[in-house]
Length: 497
Image (cartoon, rainbow, N blue to C red; front, side, top):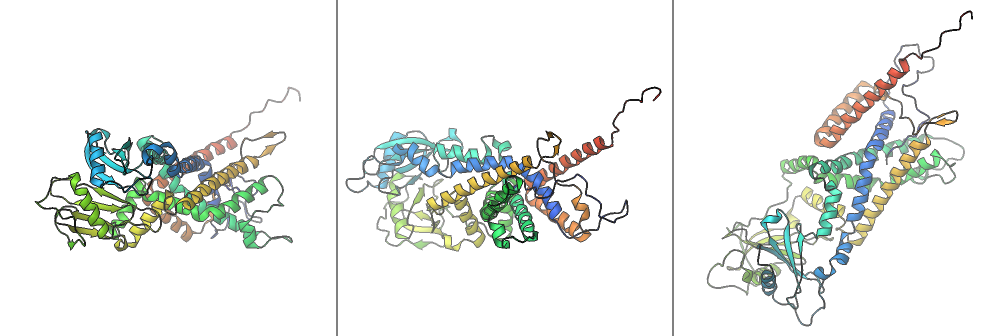
């Protein structure tokens, strides 16, 4: 939720309490609602544009599997399934190498469906962290195409991913997405508190139940700000869990907050276990059914002739489903086989293989990951729309559209509450009354400052922008006060009056 101005027309300074002596301070309170209202307003007005961009770009990204299938149909799919069984994987890799003489063979992703192509990945120094992927028909060995990929992502998916994460503006653009994720949960929780507080304190003869009033907006409400506020608040309640999830998972791989998250995982010993591919046995286990044992010692690193043996060893040792087989990084190192099934129930087991000896040198099972590492991995897959397939995509699309509607209604309320002076109207509404923090009791105020400081350290984008908001608010208050204290010039009285 964002931009909820659900109080009566505000003033810049709080009114004195009835019966209070001039110059006395108002009684301090335990209620944080006035302070939340002002924070929610400013965050909504200033951060909402970033959330709009994140929602729109995320809405585009979430359907990349379908878009890829349309745009890259030739590369991703075979012309005809069969006849017969697929060729040995090593033959498919050799066909790709023959068609791609430059670059270094890096990995191969066997076809994961009867109509899918095999992906053979090459490292090309000129591409930096990107690769070139050759798509091979597993039945015929025909080269279906070549694409520049980014860790398996097609050019379209890569472009939309970059667009969502940093708008193709590199380091500057990264700040937009991290700022949006840092504020989303604060705006959403603040709006929930404000909306529930409003619904639970209203009394009247025809009032609905509190739960009904919180979850459903009043269709009988008069047109104007009251109806808009109802749609804004009730829709935000339905979105709250999803918005908190998107904020948390988005922050886990952001630049600054994500780095702090990684440090926290390391301190809790909850990082993902690394696979040892050095080639030295690490709890080596004899591979079962290693019938493809090669004679004559180890071949050169990345020898495609070993791919079939590596695949056989992986399958006979329980590495099922979609996998990626990576060649040794250097002479004497082991091959690695990694499950990459992102759909629930996920499979992320990985093994290091010596295809000559027919042994598994090291194994890391997803079941043995620390709980927080599992939770983080599942959260990222769900955030990207992979975890539950189409249902996941549709849910994310509904969240994005719902967030756009809530933001639209928030800005509409701001416009509807603009003050009126005769026949002239201000362009937008005024912010809620300032000075709410002065009313808080000291213990609550001190706790609030400490919590805010901790959040500013953990979420640097939040901390920096919060300071910017405070400076904007301070400058706006000084300007308004100066205008209020400037005497209005008057014409001198006529002579002889």
